[in-house]
Image (cartoon, rainbow, N blue to C red; front, side, top):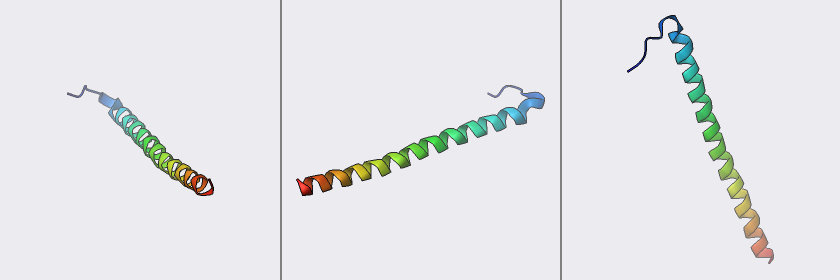
Length: 52
């Protein structure tokens, strides 16, 4: 059920769209960076064990 937004429908719905897009980009960026950092840490740990 969607409330009647009248002349503000475009502004409200586009604001929702922008907010959802930005949240999605932030979440995906965080996941991408965490994978890169984890891979780098795994590499450092492997090198440290090999030098050990």
